[in-house]
View 1 (cartoon, protein in one colour):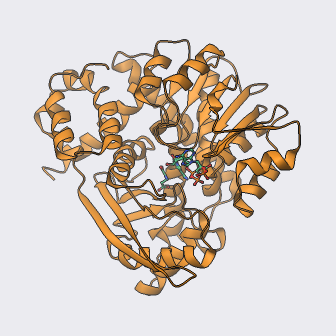
View 2 (cartoon, helix red, strand yellow; view 1 turned 120 degrees about the horizontal axis):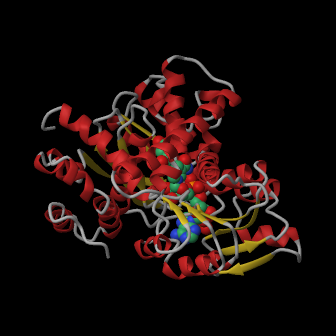
Amino acid sequence: MPVLDERLVPIFEEVLSRNPGEAEFHQAVREVLESLGPVVTKHPRYADSAVIRRLCEPERQIIFRVPWVTDNGKTEVNRGFRVEFNSALGPYKGGLRFHPSVYLGIVKFLGFEQIFKNALTGLPIGGGKGGSDFDPKGRSDAEVMRFCQSFMTELYRHIGEYTDVPAGDIGVGSRELGYMFGQYKRITNRYESGTLTGKGLSWGGSQVRTEATGYGTVFFVDEMLKTGRSGLDGKKVVVSGSGNVAIYAIEKVHQLGGTVIACSDSGGYVYDPEGIDLNLLKDIKDVQRDRISDYALARGPKVSFVPNGSIWDVPCDIALPCATQNELDADGAASLIRNGCQIVAEGANMPATPAAIRLFSSAELRFAPAKAVNAGGVATSALEMQQNASRDSWTFEYTQDRLAEIMRSIHDRCLETADEYGSPGSYVAGANIAGFTRVADSMLALGVI
Ligand code: NDP
Ligand code: 2IT
């Protein structure tokens, strides 16, 4: 493990002792602190002012009961979370995740990452995250609605256009956001569009928000390729997951001339050498809400389904992990390197383990971290807020151009910052330092808050 600067060791030790058992949060904090040594050397004010200690402690953490009734009349009790991590740059902003694995440590890791990601966009948004250990899989629409209504019956008092603006994440898409917005509107008697993002187009949503995280991921990769005077044309790409981020990453790779030959869900992966049939995938995943194994069944014998297999064993030029945290470990990384993969860019949040990242940095492979690569989703959420505030709606083309420009600017800022702090070419150092300095400077300007 890389050593931490001696001024950062006590901060990390405090994070460990104050947040016991929250492994994902520890991992996310450590990854940022590992980049900050040169920053506190160059600018001792960051170490002297306790701004880093303050950043590691959420401004507010809300945990609540979510009771709801199944179609069979049984009462279920889930736990709801909203961690309002940092509001130095704007209202707390970040998604809601519904997945059985959700607990405080997951919400805190995601909220912590969100602070720096949102800072990198250059837009006026603070960092937060929320969710529940509710599992939407196998639940009817009516059950999902009752759960969402109960969740919002508590959450509504904590959020608002100027306070905290949630959106989607794993298990939360336009269906769930619709039920939550409906309940928010009903309780508050306000059509406050800017209180949630990722809304449907007919009720205050923005063009391109659905596609934004996946498209933005591929725009970022395109910028990486351009620095080597190359492009996506003819490239073989592997994308893990088959949810919102994965589907629109696949769509943009295909639009830019690459071919996605494999994707997955938690049951395994499909290998489709001719390229993923996106209309079929969208129908199976978005409409039928079925499994990736059904995709292979529908495509016939030319497509294989590998249950519980590692998608990183499929040889490719570019790998885009777009499913979940820690899905790409050292074995997966070794396999990608062995098979000649050139770029790994994180569409999901923290999908590569620290051991995998260490292997990438010692190989001829370029690695780009989530807080830069997948920032297009939240950036387009901020564009949605901007449209809501001005009661305007922009065209698809204009919004997509704004997204592409934001991704280009994040990419360039990462490389410039990495250069400035003595780690040329490191997107990890660039993203962490550029995100950190913007937030920390604002916090210092606002006093000890
Ligand atoms: P979805 O719920 O739409 O899709 C999630 C996908 O990941 C599904 O294919 C799911 O498979 C798979 N997956 C989830 N958990 C696991 C697991 N434990 N093991 C293997 N596969 C798993 O979520 P999104 O596409 O929205 O989110 C994907 C990632 O992108 C997350 O890390 C999220 O935080 C991140 N992200 C999302 C943004 C957004 O705008 N939506 C923005 C930025 C980042 P299965 O159905 O089998 O569970
Ligand atoms: O991880 C993320 O950036 C998201 N889930 C999107 C957050 C948002 O507010 O759009």
